[in-house]
Length: 150
Image 1 (spheres, rainbow, N blue to C red):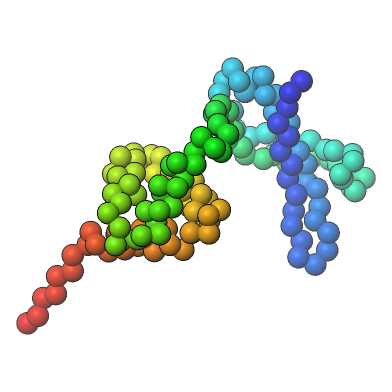
Image 2: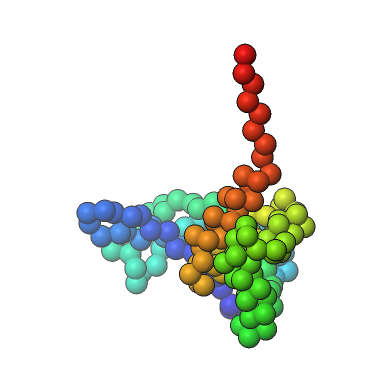
C-alpha cells in the first residue's frame, strides 16, 4: 500500500519532543477522491512512542489534497527566470511590465500561491529583497494621497 503518513508531535523548549500519534492515509483512495477531509484518529507507533499506556491518542483534523503536477528540468525555466530576475534588478527604472502583468492576470484565488512561488524563486536568486521592494514600489505608485487642508 502506498501511504501518506502524518505524525503529530508536541514541541518542548526544555525537554524532548513527544510523539503524540500518527495518521496513515491510503494514497490510492486519495487518488480516487482527490481530497480527503475530516477528523482522523491518531494511531500509536511503537518505534517512536516512549509511553507505555497508549490509551486514547485523540484525533487530528486534516484536509489533504492530491495534486499532480509536471515539473520540467530547470533548464526549461531558465529563460523565464533570467527575464524575471532582470526585471527585478532594474526595479522601477526598467521598462519591464512583466511583474505587473503577472499580477493583473492572476486570479484572486491563486494570487497567494503565485506570490509565494515567485518569492521562493527570487530568494534562490538572492533577489528576495529587490522583489519585495519592487512590489512595494508598484503598490505605492497605484495609490494616490489626497490631503485636505482647512
